[in-house]
Length: 111
Image (cartoon, rainbow, N blue to C red; front, side, top):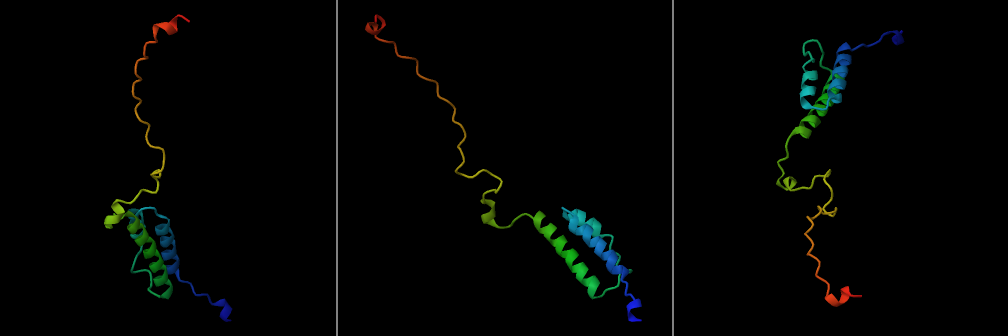
C-alpha cells in the first residue's frame, strides 16, 4: 500500500524550473528577471527547495562575478588572452625611400 502513496512537491518543481531559467542566463540581469518569478508564499521551505534555491543562487553569483570589474591591480596589466602573443610579428615598418641610383662611371657605359 505504501507504493501507491506519492509525495508530490509542486513548489520544488516550480523552483527547479526557475532554477533552470536562471542557470541558462548569460547575464545577471536575465537571472534577476527569472528569479522575480519565485513566490515565497506558495513554495514551502524544506530540504529539497532549499537545495534548489542554493543551486539557483550559485548560478546567479557566478553571473554577477563574471560581470564585476576586477579590483586586482595586477590584472590591469595582465595580457588579454585573446590578444596575439608578444612574440607575434611586429607591425610592418614604413618603407624608407630608396636612395637615387648612383651614376655609373662613363667608362662602364662604353662597353
